[in-house]
Length: 307
Image 1: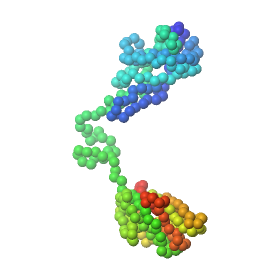
Image 2: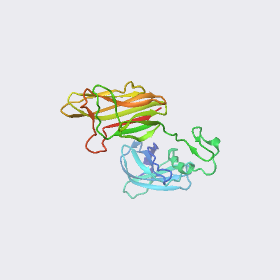
Image 3: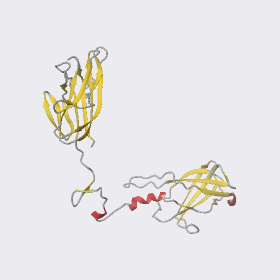
Image 4: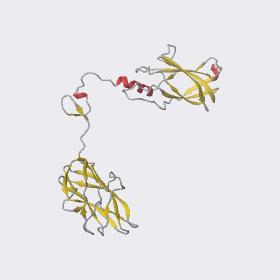
């Protein structure tokens, strides 16, 4: 191949740069894209491409070299992976590139000029640059870091105001067309910022100890006669309904079962007393476990403080 017949117009777009966690050895490979031309026209085919890394724009001694065989070139464009095993130390580097037809075994034709290596691969230098030893002055810390004492730091706030409760029993309600408290046989699987009150065989009311905006979600499995309508709503304090908390489902078919699920937001104050209540037109409508396994609850309640 006549060296003078080949020219190389570099795109040197570093399309990707792979990293591993700092505690592991970094992945030092990066992607190189280029445009290969002959007599000013883009070429297509398979080429062996030799890359040498130099600390100077001309002459000098190569810091590292590698050869990628049989690189596919289409309309002049090619993409290949370079891995010089991370010689990057903050100094400037240039790529010296030479090509030959793949499998020819001939000499490489060096392309000119050398290509300056852009800043992106220097991100590989970050693992070594990120090591700090010695004492860090408080004045050098960002303002978001919270000092808990003279020897430790923290920036992880404590979560407050959440609960998860559920019931594994079949719940019946003694009165028709009347809202009655739903109980939870497992009231405190996750509990923070709430206290419990006991009514009957399980807990039915939760008292807030943290004010804020809360996200509530309940899901119940209802069983009953065809055409019955089951209702669930949430109340605060003296049975005042939380706006947007009520939902209903109509049962269809003989001894039918349906899922009643709802999500809503509510502003809660300290000492607000929260409960879920159930109503149906007949006492034959019940909450039943979801299947035969004891771990499939008849109702679940999830509450999360979001602000």
